[in-house]
Image: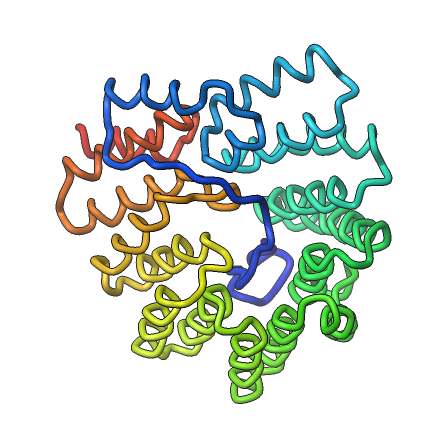
Length: 340
C-alpha cells in the first residue's frame, strides 16, 4: 500500500483482509457473445453480489441510481467506494467513502475502507502529499480499531500501516507489535504474520520464517498463510522454495480464494512457471471474490498468455476483462497493443 514514498520496503504487501465471497462461473466467453451472458448473470443481483462477482460496471450503475434515490444511504456510498477501489479510481472512491463516514461515523467498517483508499492514493502521490495523506490513513485505521476492537481486519491493516510508514507520520515497529499482541486472541495466524513482518524489518530472516510457519500452523494449513510464506521466499531470493510453497498452497484449505490470484501474480512478476500461474487463475475464476475482482484475473491471465506468445487467447482475456469493467484502462491499453 505504501510503496517507496512512505517506506524503505519493497512496497508489496503480504496480506490484505478485504471483502466478501460470492460465486461466478465465467470462462473464455469473448467479444459480443460475452455481453448478454454477463447481463443475464447480473440481472436481479444485489450491489454486494455484483461487486463480489466482479461485475463492476453493473455495480456502479446500480449504486449511482441508489444514492440518487437515497442520498443518505451510507452503505450504498461505501459500496460505491469499493467499486471505484476495484477500478483504481481513487479520487472518486475517496469521495464516496468520505460520504459514507460522514453519514454513519460510528461504523468501524466505513473508516477501515476510507483508510484503505487513502492509502492507495498516498502510494501514488508526491512526497509532501503522501505524508499528509498518510496521517489520514492512520487516523482512519485507528478510528476503525477504536470503534471495533475485535475487528482483526482493522487491527491487521493498522499494524501494516505502522510497519510501512515512517515515524514522522506515526509509524513504528513497537506499535505494530502491540497490534500483534491484540491479534493473538482474535486471529492467531495474523498475529504470527505481523511478528514475521517485524522480524523481516529487523533483517532477522530465521525468526521471520519461524513466524510464517507458526502462522501456517495457527491457520491449520490455510492457503493464505502458505501464500505469505511464498512471498517471504520471493523476498529472500529462494525461488524454488517459493514455487513449492505455492504448490502446497493450491492443495490446502482455500481460506481466502484470492490467494490463488495472488499466487499467479507472484509467478508472473518473477517470470516463473507461467503454466502453473494460468492453472491458478483458471481455478480462481470459478469463484472470484471482491478483493481480487474477476476482471483483474482475466487481465492477468491475458498478460500470461501474451508472454507465452498466444496473442489471440490473450486478446480474449482482455475483452473478458473489459466486458466486466469497460473503464479498466490497463486492459484497454493491452488489447489495443496486441491488436495493432
